Image 1 (cartoon, rainbow, N blue to C red):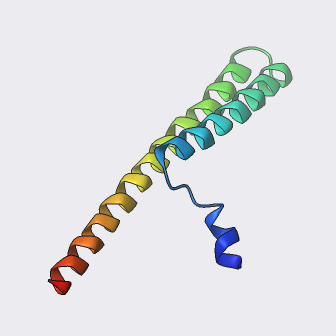
Image 2: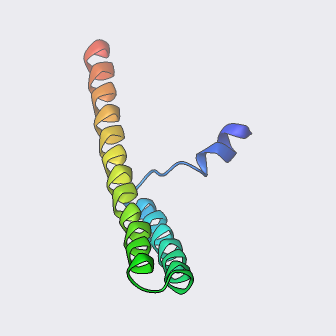
Length: 85
């Protein structure tokens, strides 16, 4: 039962990754707007860029992990096929 629930929290496709990144971007922009109100001027803009820039880094990491997991599954399938045949 816990495995079924745990699978809900695993990003399996690029589409799911894009949805997660979009949600992160919305949150980062909201946080950036708050920063700009709390810290008017250059400091607020700098914090806005830092908040949104972190989404780019997180998104790149998510896509890299998806690519790595796909390659690993393909390698395991090839190994299983070679040992069976």
